[in-house]
Image 1 (cartoon, one colour):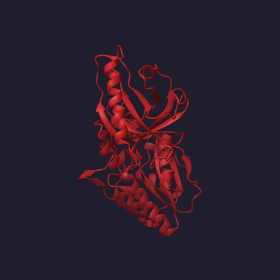
Image 2 (cartoon, helix red, strand yellow):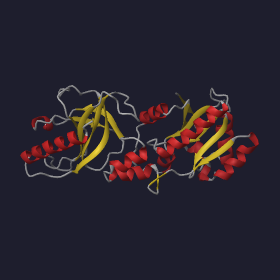
Image 3 (cartoon, one colour):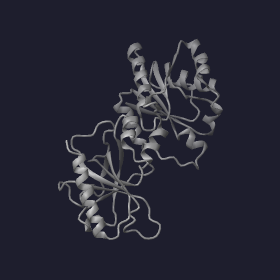
Image 4 (cartoon, one colour):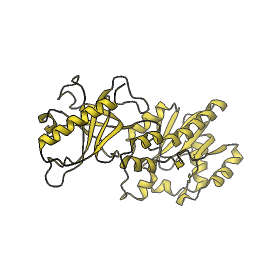
Length: 324
């Protein structure tokens, strides 16, 4: 998949496509609703000989207009691009979103960006799609703009799971409640955390359970607690498929109340449930962790011995849950 960036004010020059089927959105998490949009443009592309193209924005328009509103991201930037690649798109265009771009009228948005630059011949959008200055562009407006160019505009109905519309916000809520089953159903895959392994206090090693501290940046963390899953040492782990070289693990996301003083920060600590990887072997590596099961909420223990006993129980439960 090719990745191209589009400047704030799109020029009249086009990208290297003769005709494209385009879908538009933020695609945070590439959940099942997003996958349906992509499936439809791929059908249009295959049927008519177009290039399949995803148009996304940097930064997210909601983040641009309300920078003080902190919303955990289901994807890091490179994860989104890997997901779109795995889904088989031909091209992703990352549109710079700034004050100038936000002032484009719906007509300018269509004529300059979609028609002239992206050569759109089919446009597939979700039920809540709006575009142009102050979100004035609606489905009907887009269809009226596209009709003279014989450009097809298709709206995809909301995808549902158990009578609930699948959305990035519903997935964030499920993760915040440690409901991995629901999050996996909405995403269509296990939730993947990843980041560089950084140095920690090495307390886990003293307890007999060495851990890797993973720095996940601004990616959304699930609710505090202990989880089971699979870890992979990989700078670009697959988004949709857990690799064969996975390692069963437990993951603690929390403030470590038993051993922390003052106002502790949230840490993400991974313990590999095998002896294949040494305690110091992961420093400097990138670790991906596919979360599959929630074990328990975070709690404070009366002593380190009590904490050690609980970790032993957590490891035993994780092994049972992760058996092939």
